Image (tube, rainbow, N blue to C red; front, side, top):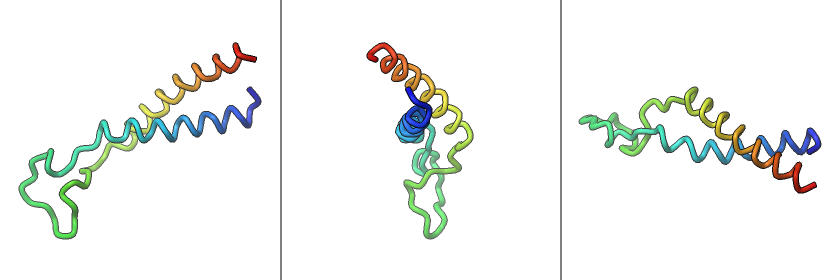
Length: 77
């Protein structure tokens, strides 16, 4: 797989993986049993999402998927 295509493929897989991992770690105010919600804040808004951990898990998942896609592309050519 040419390098520009590999980078574009990895970026696409990483972005899709982000939307898979992000909801797994988010907790809303109703799930945290917070009695008081500040004015102007939706009750379903996430509380301090752990973005660094999400980025790490997304990168690991995307790398694993990319290796499978790259191996498939290699064997099919």
